[in-house]
Amino acid sequence: MANSASGTAPKKIVRRNASIGDRIFDSLNIIFLSLLMLVTLYPFLNQLALSFNQAMDSIKGGIYIWPRHISFENYKYVFKDNQVYHATLISVLRLVVGTAFSVFATAIVAYTISRPEFVLRKFVTIAFVLTAYINPGIIPDFLNIRDLGLVNSFWVYVWPGLIGVFTLILIRSFIDGLPESIMESARIDGAGEFRTLISIVMPLCLPVLATVGLFTAVYQWNSWIDVFLYNSSNENLSTLQYELQKILQNSSVSGSAASGFANAQAAANMVTPLSVRATMTIVASVPMIIMYPFLQKYFVKGMTVGGVKG
Amino acid sequence: MESNITSATSSVTSIKPTGLKLFFKRLIQQRALVIMSVPFVIWLFLFKYMPLWGWTTAFQKYKPARSFSEQEWVGWDQFNFLFSDERFLRVLRNTFAMSGINLVLGFVTAIILALLLNELRSVIFKRVVQTVTYMPHFLSWVVAAGIIQSTLSTDGIINILLIKFGFIDKGNEILFLGIPQDFWGILGAGTVWKEIGWNTIVYLAAIATIDPSQYEAAEMDGAGRFKRMWHVTLPGIRSVIVVLLILNIGNLMQSGFEAQYLLGNGMNIDYSENIDIFVLNYGLNQSNFSLAVAGGMFKSVVSIVLLVIANNIAKRFDGSRVF
Image (cartoon, rainbow over all chains, first blue to last red; front, side, top):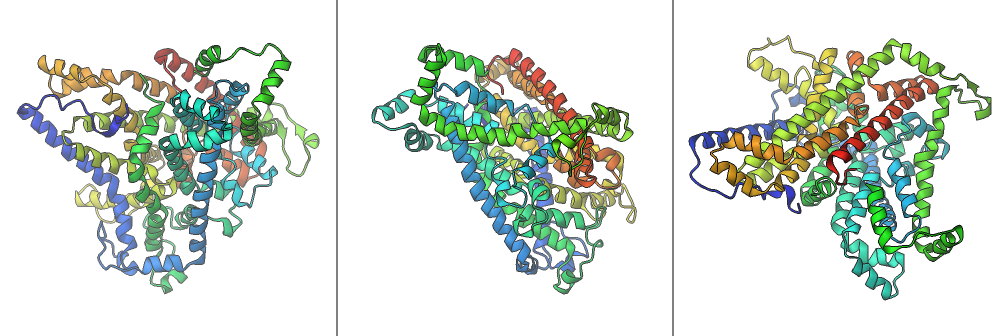
């Protein structure tokens, strides 16, 4: 279970000479999975190549996964734009603040509902778990957030999604698995509940906190609906994803991104909507793509902690 | 699952408070835990329960300028209108069709990929495939939609390949996102592209728990690769498959929102509009809050019923903790 998906596959047992059928199967399997990787990566590599290719040259077509005339003009253009620069800042800020707040708040609540002696334990647990079933819907949420005065504010990125039921249960299950004696001894040493949480429980929970942190960071970085619903009138609170979304909506719905929507300003700067779009796509996704392979072992563990048990 | 754990532990460690007095006494004793949890319960109430009040809008002819007591109450009128509205019925069809297609496609492809990954002899190659196929899960739907749009555009790779292999002639490129009937398929394929790797995680974990001696025994009996997959691996993960399937049926009303919003357009709206998009269009663009809330409320209520049924069946089937 611990190294679940990481390669303790049960076929190391017999390593006899494989039969011909076996070899054909293995080869076909490798070919098929390689094709799958190609299909997964190609569209992304294509955008990467377009973003590093001279914009005017890209219009001629024929760019696949390698740029023909390498150029950094697209990136220069995108980051010269104050709006994009500022949106990047807000994206980073919401990732850092939102993730820190979420992880900390979720850990606190998870700790309290893991204490067997806590009188409100059942009440708090049920109150949280029920929200996994009941979803008020987009419009009631919208009206509520408006009434709470969070429209046009940075905090609308932090408060509404502060604690998720899934991550709460994830952390609680992890705390449940810790030996009770550790917390017992902390208490004997005179540590209060908060102290026990901060200096004993949280350090021990690092793997699950990393998982939750990753999930939250991805959510924060990738969100755009909250920007669109609550802060679309305030450019100072726009994020990268929302800026990209606006670009996507502007470029012609139909087809040829190159021929549609000619932007005079862009043309003067030797960039095209096609190249700007590709560049923004890369800028909006690269942080997550760099980050996730390092945290892979954590989230694989996290995903399976509640799922497969016995 | 909650009650089992709670009752098991509390019967060991605590004596049930017999009266209000004892309850308050313990509350004061545990004030640290109370102070730690109550602010978040208040948060929960403010952000997750208060919005439910908005459901009252569905029974009114809501006008933003009026106060609550001045609103005109119309009973079930909004719902009656919804269910006689051809557009809403189409929206319902789209919702079920898209979540159904995504459910089946998502399951079948993830299980097949997990089986194939499990058959790989090279651990390194397996790792590489896993890492690569996880990647799109970490992209936002905005990025994914952009990528899907350019892949399917008239000068995108699909059309290029179709021309190269002679299926269509140059100049007759297909505008995939402009063909309404293709939308469900495009969405299904796009979702598979984004989530296939991620969805294998739980199956691979289940496969890892299968006793290796079962494979040995099967091999002794002369079972080949396919027979072992069919008779050992698949039965080994059957309970996980069934539980996940049941739980996912609970999400049948959740056909997603972002993908449809981002990939939908005027040409394919008859097939791309689901309940969430419908709600957004009526609520925010046309400010018909009452009708929008009625649509959303219908979705939520059906979802709750489906989820409760699904969780109960899954619990009965599995016995262990499924959430």
